[in-house]
Length: 226
Ligand code: SAH
Image 1 (cartoon, protein in one colour):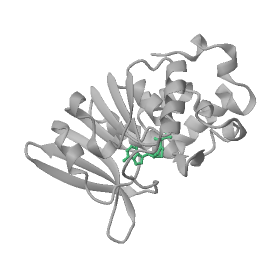
Image 2: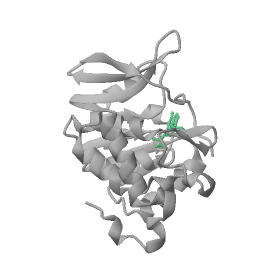
Image 3: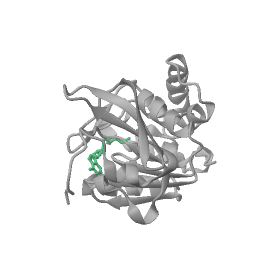
């Protein structure tokens, strides 16, 4: 696994961005019910503060979502941990993420799965994330600027498809890119607009939908912003 000791001194950060701050965040996650030690270990290592603008970096380890520009947000640590835990329950080899955003969730996944594909629709975010992920040597990630609603057909099938933006209906195209037995994890809005973390498991031509817990995400939108 990637070790932060290999990073230049500058990247490791000091003060609010130090190892102790990360350790406190991870202790809080464990208290909140995150049990997968692999997820906790990776989140204890990886520099979340590098995924925010400098002015916000000191808040990176607070238990809150934070703005990343273009009306989008970096999910709170608990949400990233929970989603990653759900991915890891599947023994995933090939994973597709829709909504690269800052790239933080992407990095955490990259450290834990064999191969990762991630799609973002906003060019500026896509570019910034690509730079960070290169810097952090996440070489098992392929990024694409596109409308994630189309998935990534050349790389399908995937063991897991993860959406980090809220869909208003089940994205059938993405289900079709799952392997048999594969799962999609997504925030899904009900007709009243309430969002639910949802797990869809493919079984041959059928699939089974399981509603997990209430969540809050930015919406899944169509098209690309260059
Ligand atoms: N996982 C991200 C969360 C970013 S918020 C992080 O850790 O920072 C959700 C992201 O999904 C936003 O960047 C938004 O632009 C992106 N998004 C929304 N709809 C999309 C679509 N159809 N295709 C690709 N990305 C999309």
